[in-house]
Amino acid sequence: MRVSLLVGIVVLGLVPWSPAASQAPEPGQDSSHAWHEDAWTRIVEQEGMRISYIYYPEADNEHDGVVLRLINDNDVPIQYAFTLVFRAPEADTSVVVRGRLAPGEMKTGDDAGLFWVPFRDGDRSVGEIGLRGLDVWTARASRSGQPSLT
Image 1 (cartoon, helix red, strand yellow):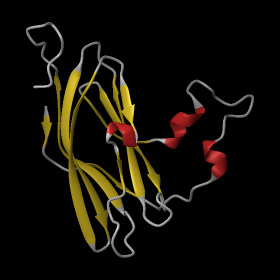
Image 2 (cartoon, one colour; image 1 turned 30 degrees about the vertical axis):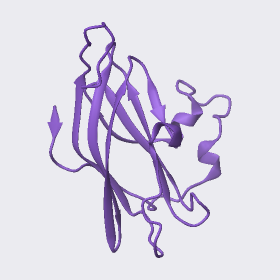
Image 3 (cartoon, one colour; image 1 turned 45 degrees about the vertical axis):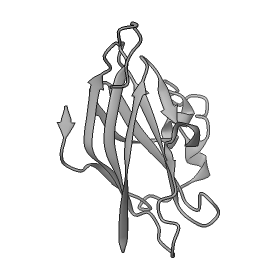
Image 4 (cartoon, rainbow, N blue to C red; image 1 turned 60 degrees about the horizontal axis):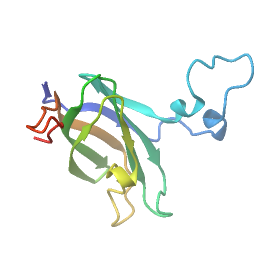
């Protein structure tokens, strides 16, 4: 399935951050999900793949950063492709993201190629992030029986 519109535009910096928001729930509170799930902001869920992010002001002690988390909720391997769009008040940039997730697999962070500091020049802050052209499909098996990346 292909989504041609810009999906999941999220305006950053509108909600003040509080360290208390990222702490474990107190006794008596709903603990049906892990406390660290609250740190992630959902962008979109499509074809059994969930995409969320964490925004890091001054990720490298100077510039804003964004890390994505991708989760495959399917019982089969999937492949994905999309363009991640970053916008600042006077600039924008984008990056193509492609890859594969095994059934139940989660990828996140720099080691998975899912961390960016998009604006390193000037005093630009990330104002919005979004996805364009999200495509998720079942990974086909190769002749050896192993999933293929094509």
